[in-house]
Length: 193
Image 1 (spheres, one colour):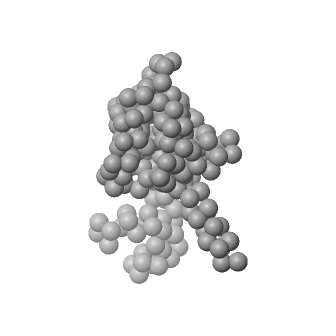
Image 2: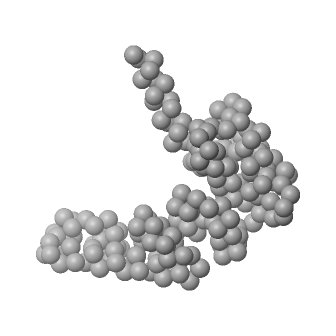
Image 3: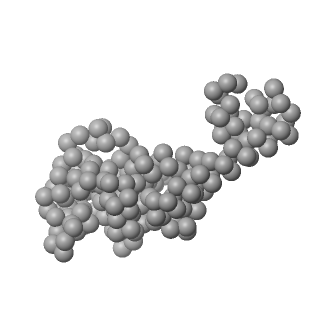
């Protein structure tokens, strides 16, 4: 298999591996590589100061891809942690994310929407998102309106450059993408009735 061995084992492709080795050995090989990559990911998370509780959640989801995912965007951790101060602190201190990093901007908008969801809102008006984002991006007690405006402008002027956003801008409101899909589906079903 040459350089494809790791990929096949990581994908747990016992059938392909069984063309060269026994199915039992292929199964053991896949499990060993998975356990090794998970152990490596857990060790790295411990080294960068992540709590063991959060580390377990993250590794259970991403497995051996954990380090790559977290390094690509530490704000993905909001889906597991839902605590802006902890995730932002980790991203800024351990991953050296700048105050005006686009990943931080997207994370702050996403967190503001999650906070709104916790209060029963399925979407928020842009001025409300702006206020929440200004508070999240602040390094002091006062809201950082400049960073909040930059975050909102970036997501509205060139969303394609940011990749797949976890939210959708709907005119004068912003909504978490998952809720947008659900509400759109429900509305379409109601119209069919």
